[in-house]
Image (cartoon, rainbow, N blue to C red; front, side):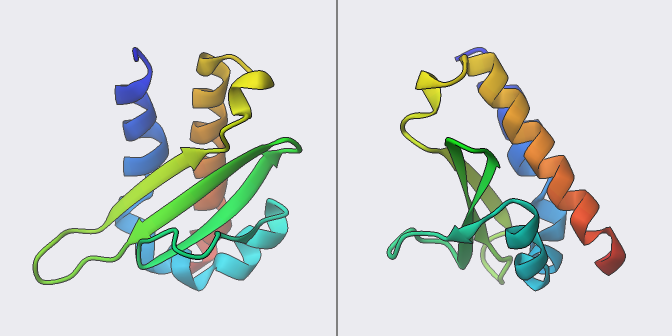
Length: 109
């Protein structure tokens, strides 16, 4: 997909340096995005779902850095997202949501 590289850079990698601070700010992020916990078994060290638009959910999965691996972030869309918006629009929603998360954690940085 032509948007995969930009999506990874502007939605996921953008958050990697801030994984620890994002974990501290989960309650604030959840309120701002009408979020909820991820389904059991989602994986990662922590995760949550946010709703940047009423019918489109984003599931952010975070992996904290350890001795063997660097921190990482994965963002998944709800499986119905394509019914409400074209792919390029969904990529933009991911980018804007990640930037909003960074805005919300600025007091912690």
